[in-house]
Amino acid sequence: MALKINEDCINCAACVEDCPNQAISLGPVIYVIDPDKCTECVGYHDEPQCIPSCGVDAIIPDPDRRETHDELLAKKERIASGALTSSES
Ligand code: SF4
Image (tube, rainbow, N blue to C red; front, side):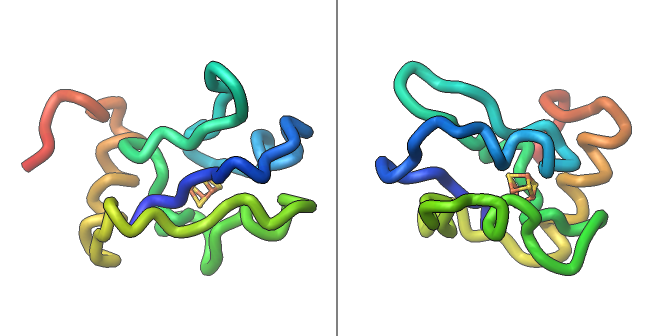
């Protein structure tokens, strides 16, 4: 599943550079993760890179975005190919 940043975020931006998919950006109030870009780092790393970079443990799994490993890998391939938004199937 994609990850999300909760209200504990202190806007330190420590996670931004660690994301291989450029999924993290500053939202209206706090930093946000684009669920269409987050692959839990599947395809790049064995573990999500942003979780340990967060000093206040504000990055958590998003239960509304449950995805299998294969689905996450397919998302990574779509992102890497530049076809992020052209197809969800
Ligand atoms: Fe980016 Fe990986 Fe964190 Fe998802 S888990 S937001 S892909 S660093």
